[in-house]
Image (cartoon, rainbow, N blue to C red; front, side, top):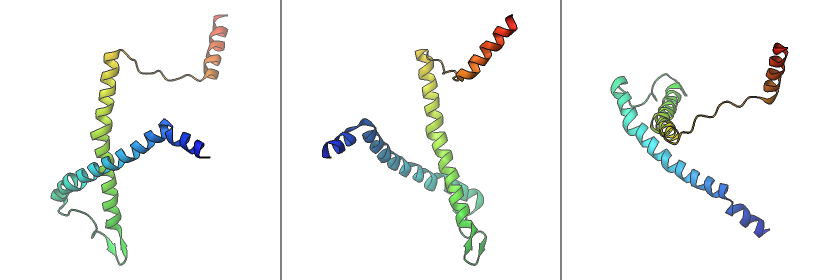
Length: 125
């Protein structure tokens, strides 16, 4: 039983997953700092409030709190996209161009390829 556990722990994908979780938590702190200390103050200069918590309050129903969370989510998603995804895509494309690697063509379904061959064969008769 312990041997199986040791084999499971020593697999590369378990270690990779653990590293990814730790890196994700650390990167989450960076993105949160970006949103809370740079983007939200910029929005508060435009709107006049750092958050929308007191916006649309009906007794115990606080629509503004949800609005603040939604805007924070959108800002975090935008920050990740523009700070991580776009630069990584450019780096990958530049590397592939330098190495002469072309983008993979979309895989054709074998049934579609066979039907295309049959159609072309019938046309040529």
